[in-house]
Amino acid sequence: MKLKKLETGQGLVAKLKLGAAGLLMRERPADILRVLLYRPKFFGKPFSEWTQELLRGHSSWSVGERELMAAMVSRTNECKFCLSAHSQMAAKMMGEETVAGALDDWETSGVREELRLALGFVQQLTRDPESVGPEHVRRLEAAGLTEDEIGTAVHIVAQFCAINRIADAMGFQVPSAVAFGRMGAALLKHGYRV
Amino acid sequence: MGELTDKLTRLATDTLEAVTASEGETEKTLRADIEAQVRGRATSLDPVLAKMVDQVKNDPANTDLEALKSAGYTDDQVFELILVAATTEGIIRMERGLAPLSDAAASKPEPEQARADG
Image (cartoon, rainbow over all chains, first blue to last red; front, side, top):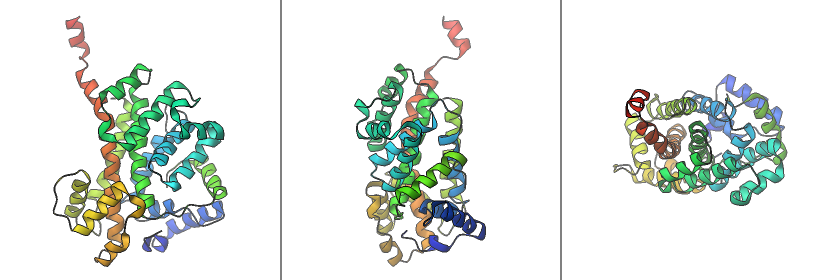
């Protein structure tokens, strides 16, 4: 973490939450929590409300499919922290082989057609938003995706293009795979609200 | 636009509103300039901040926070300005991705009109 104030500057309740996260992960709590719990009204609270609704709220995309889209954005942005976290959660829900195959090459992956096309759209909107036009959305609609399914994919891109940049600009440390696994299990069970 | 998408957009807008318009350690006008710079509009930003915006947009892992601190910005100020830059970069994609859905909704005839036309 490049900002020293975020190491220890949280309030008492936030420090207790960080301590609990450290016990859960059995190593240094993930830096994302330091950001979300530091002056939470400024960013952490509204951002985590958005995340909760987006990744855990009611949707015709499964939780695993939404985590896979989050991992796809993070991979496209080369954000190791977010890619590790969200690909692990997707793998818990969809299987490691399926997730690795979809992230490596969405075009040939064996996921259902709607998700396969959504992954391509997510990658394009992440990489080159100016190139996305009505024809790309029409293609998804023609494949049977609803407005809310497309809207959810768009929001996953928006949210992860923000948090990937925050993680990398602030220099988040990447926890061990084992610790991420423990954190991921808690996020799958309890959700994203801080 | 679908009901869920509308709700998500309100939550996203709340997040941008929080980082740009909450009370903080930086002036709101400065945060507005950071947002404008991310959106590619002309600003008169301090060059060290303009460089930070470019790094957050294009090469975030190499964002030089030490340069900001050397220029006199505190950790709290850097925290705020990075959040504004990164959140705006995300919101730009939301706007771009949702625009075709909004356009399609606007071009759909109202039920009354559709019946009259039919």
